[in-house]
Image (cartoon, rainbow, N blue to C red; front, top):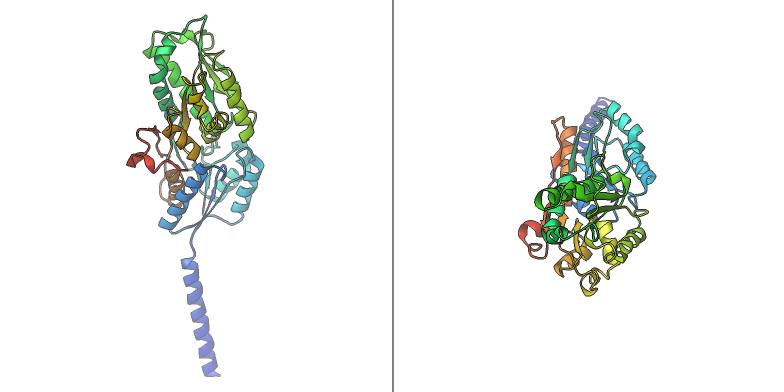
Length: 362
């Protein structure tokens, strides 16, 4: 009997030790909910998130809806992730108002929420601890600077009788990253025309989608029109149709340049121009200066062939990495703050440079 009791006690102690070891070895779980997975951009974000998970020894899930218009699907993904009791959440919200209940719950439970990419715009105070994202407003301003360098002389030649148009294509009018890009390009282009040409703000009119027209945007000018365009939906067909509509009026509206503010809109433009070849082979389109955003195989080829002037690249890998890093640090109780993950202009001349090549995903 005595030997039996000793054996039972030994087993109990061993079991306790093994349980304690298992508990100690269990990795913290961080949920990463993105705006999608369908674009190459999000695949690079995922790679960065997975790399950070390995470096910080955490488990993560990375998921996003089929389309960036599938708000309810994203909400369900977030709910499912929260049911797994994550120690932190990284979130790129499609629609902030749709996740207000979840943000309230995470805040009441003390679960850190880290925004990434467009983050969680206008989230309730204290519900998002920090955000890892590109400064989209400034990045799009850089696109305007590069385009202006090429079209400045033709802007100077504009008249009321023969005005010129600069088109800004934005996938939607709700995502904070796209709104910031559209507004950043708009504001910088207005500033450049007013300060670096013979024209003034009174010669400019910002027209089109009202979500992209600010209260202080010039709207009465008749020499330069900056047209803000949003396709009917985030679907590829609608992006292509909007691009085709712009191309159809290149001559009649004297379109000098087109800025596509994300991968979806540039894909729509390339689909409407035979992968960009028509931008050079079609005499009517030959002088249109196109600047894109992000990368992707089709856009890289169009830039390499000089169908496009170039594009702005974020660092999607680092967006994913920093999102998980911030989430982990917040979980550990460290102080966290917003991180600008950076942006650069790339073209046919520098796209193979060491500091650019790694940022251009396929």
